[in-house]
Length: 509
Image 1 (cartoon, rainbow, N blue to C red):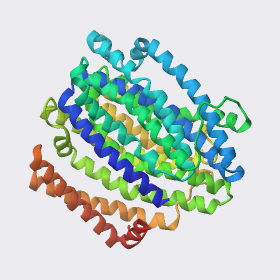
Image 2: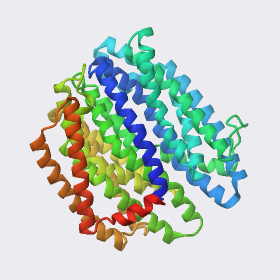
Image 3: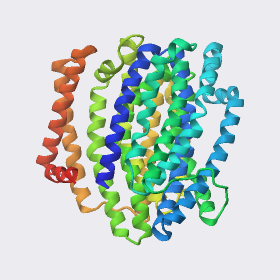
């Protein structure tokens, strides 16, 4: 599991670094005004459906079923299941994409109703979303093939595919911008083209792994396909509750002053670096592993796997959250403060990033706990918790958006994420499927103490060095982070929260 997490995490880190470069270019060219707001809404809609229908609901239902079929009936039956699901998903998503292109004005009234007060901004958002919407079909098929690769224990290609999303977006911003109406149009075309490239990459990797898929196989509904479809329904909300909360955030933010959508987007992008590297990597590696262990009758192995996943998540997410909260403004100044993105935009965005930082451990733990349900074929329980958390997020948004503006939107998401993580853990524990083993009970408090020590070091260095925008600020920020990271690992080693010798041995393996 550690090797798989490291593989997914390393490729995700590379993708997120390129994503920061892309967002730096977007901030420089588009700033945080109406054009940026329209593009981020255009990107949000296909991404929301991708995470719900592709990575969320589909993977939640498909990966355990694929792992079970592969374990019990062999690769031929597993390949047939994947091809039948690919055809059904293609038909469904083609219809959804067509309807979305036709009824985009009505969809935009739901997704960003506040834009109606600015007709030009509303029309631009519709036009850009029509360009990006076919990305939905392409990237959901990419998620299906990635699920096959993950079920086979092949994680590299699926984790590397998003790199092309960032690369092609940057290339489009430079190469297409002179030939289209606005830089936002160039970015939108880059998004759609990247979907085709990502699908081609994972199809090639699947063929190399000995499971070349024919996604145009005649559709049929044998029992295993019907089982996956039954589990997909609850999984739409259960696996995608965070994405639904983020969609609610966009709807609420569209009523706030211009730039609010952009502030939340940039803050979320920074928070997504540790969330993607840690949370997505752990969840991607944990789900097929738990499914194989449970279906092979190895409950003790499954118990150890989820405890180690929690340990790894806490060891990385807690110090990342502390660092983001303390260094929010210097990070945003270093990454984005240039061109159309000025000091005021950096300051307002940093407030949202501080709020998201407090929720980072919760976001990661949700990704650890949910596979504990999905690996056992239970997609109904997370959906009940998910519905409650979506309603809670909406209520908190309405209560906090007035006094706290866009920061209230971020804080509502954070509170609902902690409630989500707490309820998932409580139910797993109540069912006897989650026990905090001796090692986890011993190291968790030591990891929290080590993160507190690191926080003190970071706070002192920030006061002394005062990093800001520009190359000097970037260098100072890098030095602060390096010293803070060294302080954390030293404190963890001395307190017994982490064994660096064991960590080095695992990395070598």
